[in-house]
Length: 454
Image (tube, rainbow, N blue to C red; front, side, top):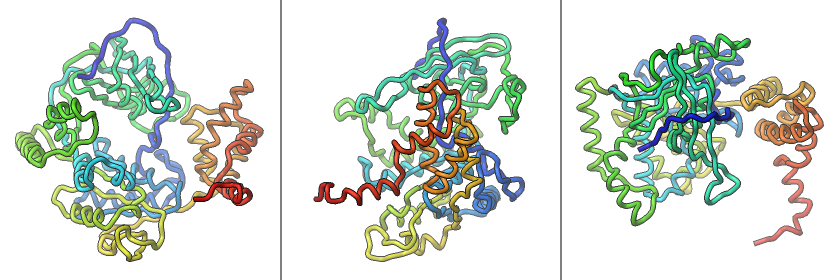
């Protein structure tokens, strides 16, 4: 069982950044997108198209269909998919899958895809739970080097102080909670609850007193009142689990036994177990204890999928309870994997016919500048105007991703020189040290004869 222990010693605040955590929705009013809103910059037409799709889904007029996002790398396809999920509701499951993962899995493709689909079907359950609830006033995530990659840090636990109007407690939580704190981008000032029995973290939003104390209108979400009473309490709790999580819970004894002899890893789940779970969920729904929430499956690099996988997904879209499928690609006309046929976006025509296609466009200079400013602000990085202008030019000349990747190294250089802000010379230095794709290709061509050939 996940562990929480109440603590007495002091701790330090830690800052974390989660990818796309700043995306709160599509940034639309009605069906009109604002230039900068909900974490988005630009991509107005794509966001307005996505807003229409969200409306169709909510009105129940999108069954058996999906979305295809087409655009160059770094043009916001993943952000757009997350924005759609956010607009559908905060409890809507979102499963992000790279097509290449299907072929690197230890289990059969059909089993892998079935697990993905069931991860994207949520069950909202209501029951009385024992929780630690309050505003996060102190937080420290503890890390250690990954056992197989010492350059990569993994969370091993956390200490956290929660406060209500009447009480405060310091807690020591295990890795299960620490991972969720990072995934949900929990930080000081958030109102959260820690479910003792299930090991879940629930983030409600920013505390009212934090929002009121802020001089800037940084928070688009409605602030949450500071809880009253004890930090540890029993309350009616509403939470969402996926069908796959229920499958794993039902099969837990078998999985644990297998891991003793064969090691931990992915395991195929017996269809009988899934039938038992489905029957249990039907009973909960009839009794009013639960409701089903179809989620979103986002498949990136979809041009890497083969014809068998496309056939499986095409059939899955026709099921009565199916998630919303969002595909993304940067390919034009290409060969469908597993065949000799070429098709638009390397996808079968019968599947393309049932998809609404949304194009994302490369960002212009003004949009690149605003995105860099948002990234720097989220990463707690200070950058002066000259450095920002120069970095914007690099993003326009090379790529947005290259410009964003230079932020962190430049900040390291600036701090080493005891500077409080990144200056243009810091960007110029790291630009020389970390080359873009074009310069890398030129380098290879220049020394082509000296490179090994196989």
